[in-house]
Image (cartoon, rainbow, N blue to C red; front, top):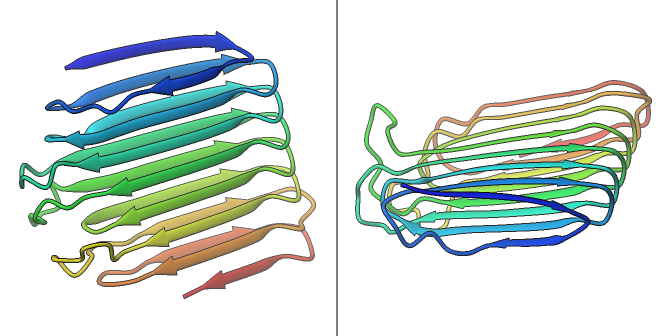
Length: 196
């Protein structure tokens, strides 16, 4: 197993493609204006990414794909951001055949505190799950689940979006193909949610 530990202050972090049986990436950043880009592509058994950013105006992008060889990969991504005006983007794609019970999994969790934060999660095919929790106001969350090559008819979708504070939140959830489930809770006023 590869293990990559990166810690920086006000910096750009790039974690290159995994190209291995599995890959683990840990990124910790503090201060403002940080950018973390984690690319875990072509993993046989899956990847694990953990990004923690404190401060404001930070950006985190995580890309996880498997090699399509059918070894039931498990991709796990966790992004924790504190402060204001942060953005997080997670893209997970599983092309290996889906085994049931769901051993082929995509799991993403994004937790943002502060206001005016944005989170976007795209999960294609197989055992998908996504949780986005944001506190304070003026936050946006976008979740897209399903499709890509869709040889397995894009399977177990599940999404939970929770946004709190004084409102002005936007939540967009799109789920395609099989056991869809969605739970959106927004507190405050002037909320907008679109689930399809």
